[in-house]
Image 1: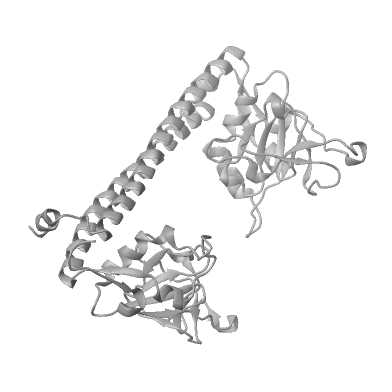
Image 2: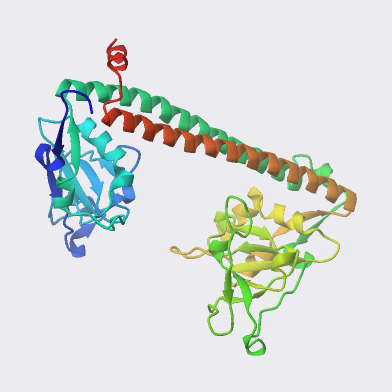
Length: 400
């Protein structure tokens, strides 16, 4: 620690206000009373987002520029309050005194987010006012605090901009893949589809069966639930072993090698995959529609069609339900797609789509690793800042 720094308890340099939730009968969406925040749902990078609820009964108040800390799992994330508001039991407000710069305090708490652990070494499920007040914090002279904040502001602004650029590159990679799919299935020039047929998924797929558990009293199966299919890799990442006794009620649909399954619950999340030989003969949730192409058509043709914008737009228009929007198997099978009569044309287009998907996935993986690296850089800079490793030279350069 640098010369002239002191270690104090957070409660010695800040006021800590524990949140308390009003009764729900006082909540409203008509902007009556104060904005009400229950937890970290509205947290953003630094400043809390717009409220979605208000309360006419005020319990505990936070003021503009108070630091709001999430005190129930997850414990530790912080944001600044942007206005006077009421805070519920999932938050605490930390109000800086004249002894500490509020931004310095914010950055320090951000640096300790992953270190809030209990005496047993387990991560807190919750943290109370006393525990927050006992958090040790290094206190340099106030002018040095401001210099540290200025350096961190500058560094993080550059990192944030780099993250924005990388996220835009990820979106571009996704759009590149999407535009190629759309161009194949819905080309701008209709003559490109000469020699193709319009079919519904129901017409080009065979009927499938559900398992009759009474016929399988001792056998075990691998079960694919909705969460088993990764939205990023479009593959099955995990399964559960089930039998007649422990199988969930939704574990019914028999799957075979080459089947394409698509999640009809929250369909716009694009959970789709092709079943391989290893999973053939097992079962999936009734939350999937099972599309088993007839022999003359490739599974990949159907799989890629499910990822097109036109198919997704149709699913979005047909989905029903607010909490768990869903479509039916019939909705999916009623979708119309173009199918080339020539196997050579089908094969050539599938190769193009596979190549562009691989290229796009590699780009996305590369960019996501860059995002991870930037987050690691942030942590490293914060660690240096609060261990006194930011050099006087850096501080002077920032002042200039």
